[in-house]
Length: 315
Image (cartoon, rainbow, N blue to C red; front, side, top):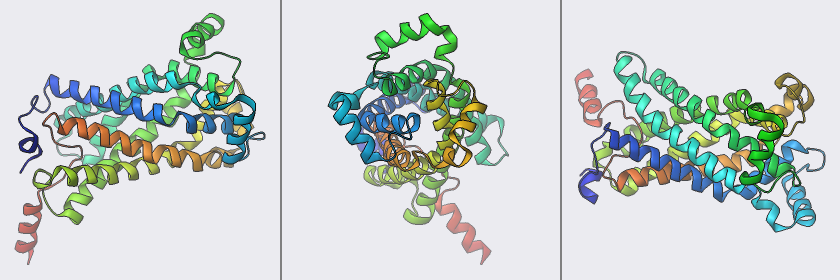
């Protein structure tokens, strides 16, 4: 029984304009809400990156911020998180679905990993151009309490003093962080979902219940988020340093932070952040797709029945 028959008719056909619209809205809602929810942890992460001597551990950072700035400090930059990552999620998920269809048609005989890489990279470039101004303001607001209260006063202040350059100062390291993350995330998700359906559940996706499909989504999402956070951690430290003017260039940021610290600084809290957040994003995203009568995410290379027939013939 297919997911669409479980919930009624489809809202639209796959790969139609309506389908990409639902994917875009799903990406926006899932990314915006989950990033909003973990704003307090993001505040801790950014402050540990920008002020590593003062905030040497998660507990020290939490108690010091609470004592010096009060509970409201943990929600600084919430608007940048919600709107910025909402826009990024809309582009990341919606355009990934679009580019995956385009590249699947162009690269018919190529390895599917190449399709996943090309699709996620193409979508992520556009998503980061949209995100960058929000990220610049968010990081500055979180690490510099006297700079601004949020988007409404932070945006005009940066633009007036630094122009477009100030809003896009961190674009290259942002791409350096999010491009590898997105490529690894989508590819890991696709391959993990494929592995779970073929080797663990051993049923076609369409034959699985909604609970089983969403279970696969959560497991694949957690694997994708955790691996992606490790890959992208060095660039995340550079983004925080540049946006808070701790360094004027990527080269100086790397030198000041230290090569080893690029990989280790704030990594535990990033894994705490990114793994569950990406899991929830995929869960919300696929839930929206299910209630629209559409299949959940994840490419399955072959039907289970075809694999079993091939095994029988080989014997």
